[in-house]
Length: 255
Ligand SMILES: [Zn+2]
Ligand SMILES: [Zn+2]
Image (cartoon, rainbow, N blue to C red; front, top):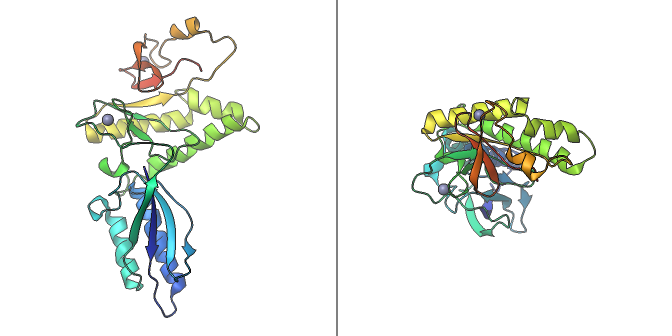
């Protein structure tokens, strides 16, 4: 992923508020189309331009060929407000070090994120590279809104778990129980991605550590959904020790 700086010339006479609004609409549309992962608030430069920082999955993520109808609409609105075309400067790779998937064709995808990650939540199960959301057929109104909401909710649950103060057990249960509200929504999104792409899409079920969770016991753990054996001979990607092809679930041996 890349850190990018995007800046805009604003109209000389009045209308700055409207221009700001139009720029925020564009930044939001870029996130919902998957062209940007995150953006930071606008600020005014000493040269009177408006500037924002973005993380983007690929160097050319903001190209028009990846734009959906909402991004195109926001760009038209920008023009009508007299705002110049966005000018983009790449500032380097982000420290998380996520790379886009480089496979010719992934054999499977996995839906996984964590509290720190700003990468898109769909990864390739072969190379564990990021799948930019704009490369997936969009579901709702030409956007990836439901996927992004799930991503935010998962990160919120993981944050509760990491902070160990409020709602820790709630957060862990949401991430580990295959029938939690979070998991049901995530698995539904996996089914939708699979339907649209024809690529098997797995849901990652978190397995927390526990005092009675020895490696031996853990290895015998069956798939929580169908009760079948799902331990892999070799882990796939960084942490998946279990995979149930029938239930489209992957998981880890307790940390
Ligand atoms: Zn890949
Ligand atoms: Zn199963």
